[in-house]
Image (cartoon, rainbow, N blue to C red; front, side, top):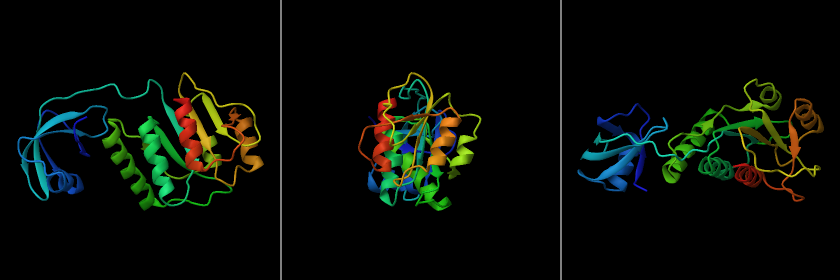
Length: 228
């Protein structure tokens, strides 16, 4: 796969300027020079092969030569909502969900949540989505929502019909699905009984990955992989 760089604005055939960290990475780190071919993407579902015209320290000028739309997205959507783990484990979670093809991620605030990311942390997670998309070839960025309280998440009217909540104490296995779904993963302290009861009352299905208690990022990634 060609070297990919993210451009946050509109892209089309013709000349475009790349600035900021991506320009620095292209010119100073990767040392691409005029005449070299790279691929730009902006999250709109397409990718844009482009030739480098001029490579400076702060700006790279390229000419987009084509618009391509490779089929790399899943045929159905999968949302994941999870309590955030500590430290770098949150970056790992977002990175792997992006690679797997998850379409939307919501950090949850539950009764036993330990980590409630601030706006700056959410921006870092969105940057992690871009970096993972560059590596894996996705041209649609996984959406990262603001932190949402569990009750407010349950009340969303736009949730997919298939609604699954990972829970200990249930023997119902998690199986692959053939359509859009949403998966909820609680904190490592587990769901409060009232939180789990509210989900079941709202039509969610409690499912399990097995008898062992997994870390948040392990459970979310393993469950997403199975569903997809």
